Image (tube, rainbow, N blue to C red):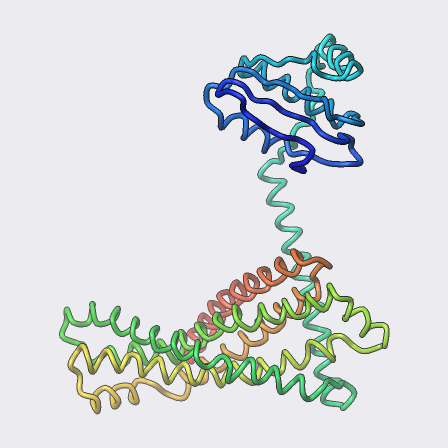
Length: 376
């Protein structure tokens, strides 16, 4: 509530004075009873509440509601409340309201729902999200076909900017994480392999783990938080500013002009970043193997070469392509679904990142099972 409408003072430790000023009507202001209640509860030894209405002008049920809540609070905590300082009309209405006992069940109560109901609502929401995601995927496929036939167009400068953002600009963070993940894999493997005198197989563990799994997944998670959420924020901000409506007014396809260049940029750059992350992951394991486990450099490199084949490299690249599709679609879809205020843009950004990471983990599990079943 505005501070100039209610002044709180404490003449003594046992007394609080609430001085009302100006107009107290539904049209003029709102107040937060919860904050005022916390303020009163913070004063230990409080025994009396005094109301000062000398500077009160117009009032209606807004003012009466607060007085009623103060009256209930004083009865609850055995405090003295002096109502005679109220305006005559307010005092009479308050007495009239207290003369008739409250009907049982008259207060609004929070409606609870059963577990089955909540599960049903969550299921319907998940189904609705799946349908929207599928429809968006179909629109993106049609846009790709229009691009191949020369009917879809977007600005080349935008596409080059997205390539720069999704590729070279992401190299520092991807490089750092890849080296650290490779080193952690080597340390974890070394703890167990040293028990059997098989430290050399740390090279196999790091090489296969980076190329088949961790390189693609860690790069995808980084890009989901860095690039996917940026897509959602950019498109959400355009939604707030009315830029997307303006493009629609001019008959420009939103998917062709805004989504397609972002999608293609990530589809091109994520596999390249994955290859770079694979190399640095192996390098991180090499640092641990050579520097900590006393494995010779040549021996570590030969063991890594013998443990990794083209099928392993192909598995990681296929996963990176799937992850790129998931990240680009999640970021763009959430951005286009954004509302028209700043909080909605923040929600869309968070939702894009959560959706991307969830789908990354799901698709990683699915592809891992499928590749193992076909012996790839």
